[in-house]
Amino acid sequence: MKELYCPACGTPCVRVTSGTNLMEKTLNRLSIFQVRCQLCTARFQARRPGNRQTSQEFDRREYRRLRANFSASLILDQPAVGGVITDISMGGCTLQASSSLPRGTFVKLIVHAPAGQPDIKVDAAMICSIQPLSIGVKFLEFEPDDKQRMGQLVLELLAHQQAPPRVSA
Image (cartoon, rainbow, N blue to C red; front, side, top):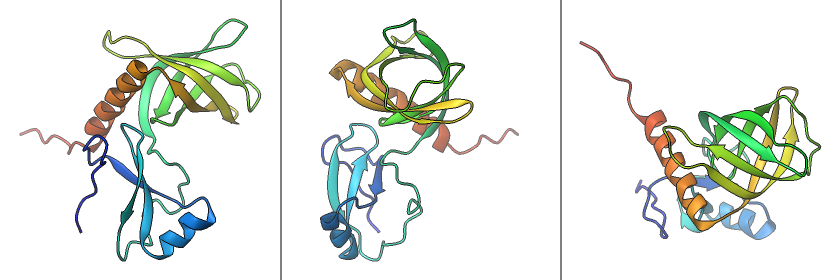
């Protein structure tokens, strides 16, 4: 079957997402699926005959979470809460943090990018889940430059995590 490409940025880094409303669920039955670009966040429809069962069927996320290990800071009115991002996507991240914030809290997030790259600022984010040792954060709004840098970071993580293992002779 032909590989899907994002019509906005041309990348093959796309993910079929589950239908959320009645119209999307009806289109799914006709093998027309909602697809989300993992880099530029564009959403589009694509026909995928015979593709009702996907490996993502039980994952509600529109973006694939990628393993990561970056420091980050949640910024509120009070002092910043530091933590470590353990997975990330264009839609959100999991942050291991020593402080637990209430679900629904709006925050700003600064991702301290690796290798001397500039920090990535998420202007608006929301705490969407709380676990004993981590916080789920949903990204809501970026400045265009920060969104582009986040896309580049995600692309690097995708390339690194999908690269075949090296065989040493």
